[in-house]
Image 1 (cartoon, rainbow, N blue to C red):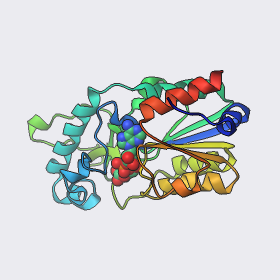
Image 2 (image 1 turned 90 degrees about the vertical axis):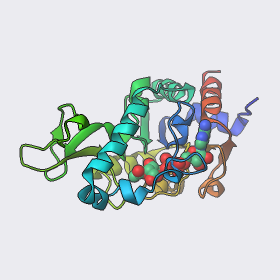
Image 3 (image 1 turned 120 degrees about the horizontal axis):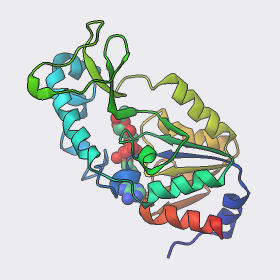
Image 4 (image 1 turned 180 degrees about the horizontal axis):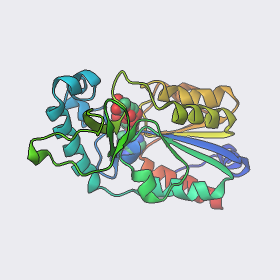
Length: 244
Ligand code: OAD
């Protein structure tokens, strides 16, 4: 039984401006591996060998192989009840922003509308040199990596370690968090910046800060309410209490 405190219920009902930050934990119950922890993706692969500009320049084929593997994995997964709960929440508030660090596209697939993808989207590609989107299919079997009309190599449209986040999405995320009356941080270890500073920006601007995560994180001590458990169980309970 998930307890929703009267204080939280009051904020859930009275808030009009709401922002949510999600991380890999929200997609864990859909079968997408998280980054950290025993089952994390990075415990099997070394991130610095794969998700960096250097890695791509050194060995684009290897980086592409890894992304094609993840793309294949993510193409078979479906949104879970936590994604669905956020779709419901969006309908209940006038000002609702969903900020995600996930590249799996599951929020959009579930039906969320106002989404800021801070780390890109694994189903999209762009030119490494000029940044232009590349929409043709990629066939690794042909042994020829695709090239842009400018001659640049094509890469997945995701943010790699050491790269800047898309400035427009990041600014909009900080704006949404600064004006939010209620902020939820869901399924993120809250250790990778700048995304991890977004909930704290909300808190320091007066938002009621709620965390939903399997375990405590560095932001837990700043929250007004922390749920420790599965997002797929807690998020639907939060939305149910909102409708009561
Ligand atoms: P992490 O893997 O760091 O953290 C996932 C969090 O979700 C952990 O704290 C888990 O305890 C929690 N978790 C796991 N299953 C859960 C469930 N069913 N319900 C609720 N919580 C659950 O993933 P992120 O915080 O998203 O960046 O990682 C942030 C960034 O680090 C990623 O976007 C990626 C990586 O480097 C880039 O690739 C640029």
